[in-house]
Length: 231
Image (cartoon, one colour):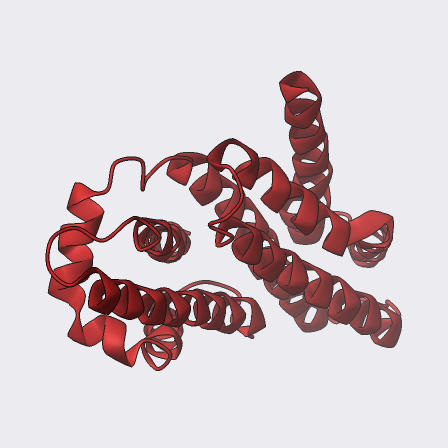
C-alpha cells in the first residue's frame, strides 16, 4: 500500500496547487497573470479528477507502478499548460502562504477512501478464486454498486477540496460531508452484506470485512465525531 500513499500525495499536491493559483498575482501584468492562473487552475482541477477517476476505476487489487503511471498520465493529459509552466507553479507554491493548509487531513482522508476501494477489488478477487459456494452473481452486483459509491465519494471529496471560494476552515468538513453523502446508509449496508457473503464462503477470508466494512464504519464515526467537536 506504499504506492497508494504516493498516489494520495500526488492528489493532495495538485489540490494545494489549485488553491495557490487562486492567490492575487504579484508583479508584472496583473491581467495577463490572472488569465494564466485561471487557465492553469481549471487544468489542475480537471487533472485532479482524472487522476482520481483512474485510481478508482482500476481492476487491480493493489496500487503498483503501472497503475501509478496510468493515473499520472490521465492527469497530465488534462494539464498541458500546467506541465509547460511547472517552474511558475513551483514559484507560486513556494511563495503562497497557506497553500498547504489542511493538506495532511485531506491526504489521510483520501487514503482511507482509496484504501477501501482497492481492498474491495482484492476481496472480490479472493472470493472468486476461492471457489467457495456463494452466490457469486449477488456478491458481484453488490460489489459493483459499492465500488461506484466509493468512486463517487472520492470524486466528491476532491471536488469539495477544490472549491477555492469556500473558507479554508470549512473545506475538509465540507469534503467529508460530500463523500459520506455519496456512500450513504446503503453503502454501509452493502459492505455488511458483502462481509456476510465472504464469511459464509470461508470464515478465514476477511479481506472485505477488515479492508472495507470495518474501515467504512470507523470512517463515518470519526468524521461525524470531528464535525460535532467543531460545532
